[in-house]
Image (tube, rainbow, N blue to C red; front, side):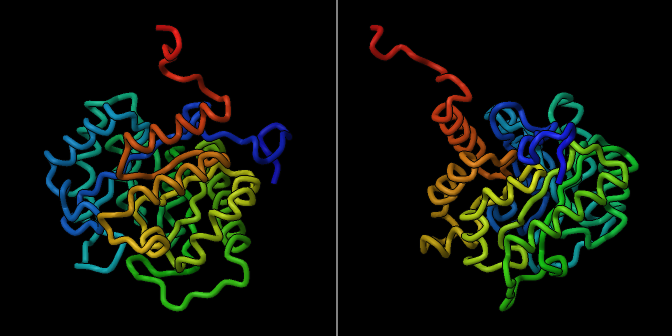
Length: 294
């Protein structure tokens, strides 16, 4: 795949990435049954308080969702709009310079969210609604291309198999990225997400990290949503409340290999991990260097 000006594919940079560090996307769930925060930001005031807090902690992007990813009570499009659109509108009013993302697989919800101020559509179900990418393109906002192996929204993987999961992810996300550009999404506002745990087991998740150089080398900026996922918990044998250290280890590994954005629960910790990796690589200086001078 060619880059913008004929440079190597891996040189493509996302417009959402604050060079030279990865962008940090903070998760804000307007759901009463979120797998991790268990509804902590379901209420409007709680969601807005979290938005204020994560921006203060260094978040570059706010990802607002209104439907739990896994199985649960039915949430129709109208209810999803009622959950996310007022929050997006108020977040845009309070923080005009911050990128706001809507986490949805529905075109109608994305359309309403963009009208309220969203800059990015996080399609975590890999184009299940084929009109979603068209909405993003019509408004020329950003679009996240994900990979689910054909899984239906809000389902869990069952005995999934890939001949080569990395090749499958690259093929599916690259095709969707090219369609996004054809629909009008600016090239530098397209991201690809291998989408850990969606249509994948723990071995798939680890292989995607192990071969991350191939994903980054495919040419599109990579977003990774590793935060407290089941593959992390299974790898280290930890329940949901004990997955942060392993999540941060995986984040450091991925940051060192050129991931453009991380979707996370723990914003401050992730910001520190990304800065430390950047400093080790020589991309950014330390924030304070008084040791040995006093």
